[in-house]
Image (cartoon, rainbow, N blue to C red; front, side, top):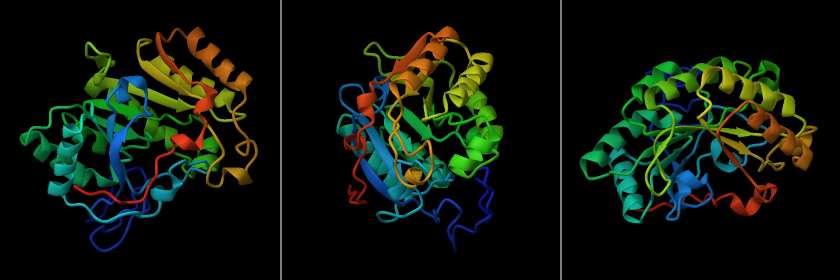
Length: 294
């Protein structure tokens, strides 16, 4: 069967070979643990049950998770094992099950969530994605995902091609966000402030790219409610191949981040998560060793 799960539409027969993303027939998991460094409404006090999958359909020059996005760190997991892993994270106190870069593994994720729920999984499912998604795949997730957590990176095709190798990024990511909003709506939290259902849009402000951030925010303001939860991230630091490309070879300036924040507020967004620039620290990048056991 030819893989058409994402906009790459690479057509790989995943039973015999890997796709563009590097993934084969079954998922490989680089890390699964309570994760305390997501947005407060995701991590809360007990942590998010983060499952970091190997494989990615983008090729970002600045990827913090580059160790696992096109390399396989760990062993293959079956559907029942994945369901059991979700239940284990819930038993450890996770506020949610946080599926990180899950799209290459939708064929396993969907039945695993069903199996886990039949066995007692009751916490929300968070779909943590780069937003480079097809509507066809997202529609299969309707009723599976409780909280969408997309990172909307760019609007401009030239920037998307230069930094992530995907000139058509926004042509897919824009409609994808509207579908996520249709499925789950504006974010709803429980009495302790933990996300239960809805959409949180992330955007990482890049050095020298405040104009691109404005384009992203303009799209959101024109197409989503101003009550949409926006996570405007200032945690950028040069990683992977970013040191080879100016201005990605430097950290985000305070004045650049302040300009992005001011514009977001001027547009009228009511729920904006703002970071300290101290978040740009390698200490917050998890260790990916593939040593995941049940």
